[in-house]
Image 1 (cartoon, rainbow, N blue to C red):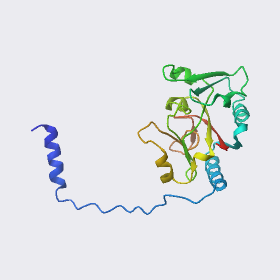
Image 2: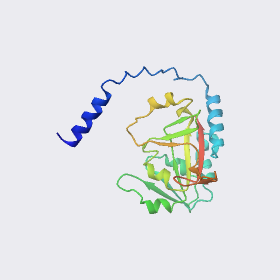
Image 3: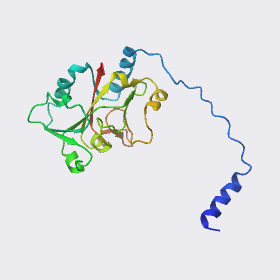
Image 4: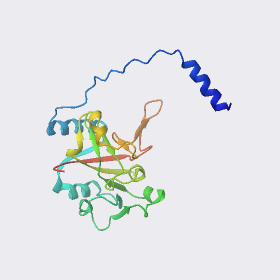
Length: 210
């Protein structure tokens, strides 16, 4: 008998007379009745509380809004599947760097970039959480975690109120990035430090009509 078989045998013996686990109650909410305006208001409230910048705009305003958020940027990275029309109002002096399979930017290149612009998969209004799932318009996880400034486009059509409403929209085996405000942590004396394990600044463009 191998050591592994012996260990597993002891575990089985120890659990042989264990009581059967009780049925887990699942009476939590799985759907909501909030209309679009209420969902927007709730998500904005949560994001602002997390110290994210939030603008509620229409689709036609995306290029100008992105440019306004990046007026101090010298370069921006974007995933290869992003709608490049969203970047069309950026000044010509702002370098635009695409990150694509087979042509991925290095960590050093990402770190030297002023900002990143992505779309998003699903957002949960109640917790103020934006989820990226690696689709071509969102890119790999590194591009949204290394640059210091993240401009995230959130289509209103992808906003739900509750976590149980969000999960069926996701493929959980994909590399998911869950964002609730800018990256931040606190030390033992509760001094808030931002940008420790992700962007220091998060700007959200909540877009009606898409």
